[in-house]
Image (cartoon, rainbow, N blue to C red; front, side):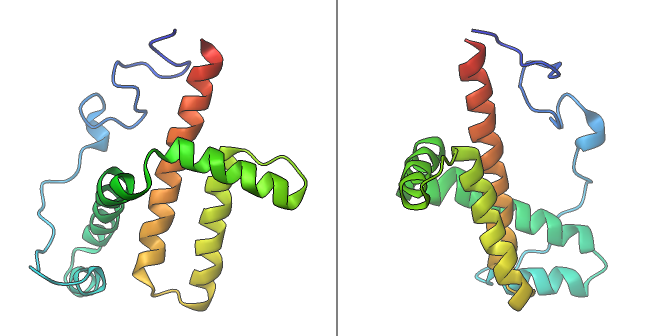
Length: 147
């Protein structure tokens, strides 16, 4: 088993690791906190201030919390889930579908919804989450192929 994937030059395995690459460290600013506020209210409050980058941080933090916490606890491992969904879609569509393609299709579903409702913050969060999960699935596929 290879410990380092081709093109990844540090132990943690993340291309944009803030510990290994200082250029990826978050700025020393705290996002606005609104206890009990919904994501939409937090995003709007951040947009109203001069902290537009904080909107990005809030969306990414929310996606991370869901992907690594609530959703993982509710639905289990994303690779297993996306692989299972790929098999179902393959049978339904009559053509092979990969777990990575499941992620891409779910992202496109959210993009399609955003065309109608571009201010629906949950769809932006979901796109980030599906992208992260797709990256995880692809990395696991690569490392399984390297063994």
